[in-house]
Length: 154
Image (cartoon, rainbow, N blue to C red; front, side, top):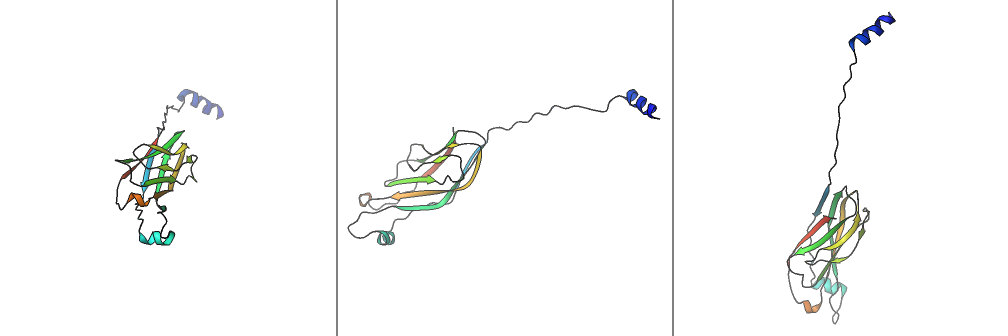
């Protein structure tokens, strides 16, 4: 009986097939911002932090966040505003606790500035953005709105 099984397999041939499989993972670079920023420097804030005869001081807002995903290496995130400078200086930094990169405090102005660099192969969700407003009495009374642009790039 064993001899018949052996003959049977050699007569019928092999039952195998091969297939070539190609996989590809392309570059993924995605960035998103969430939250609304509104920094209001008012009389109540001044009275809480300063007194008559002193110049204005800074105020911050950390109610927004930045998220990004990249499978690339040596990436950075830049920030700039569309339009002209804010009258008083506005700065921003990102909490880089969960990132492989290094964060910097940068002015928010029309020139793209690196706020975090050295990013690579990571997905970071809801990194806190902190905006700082530093008005002076010479800035006067004002209300300004600008679009802030974040870019994940080489």
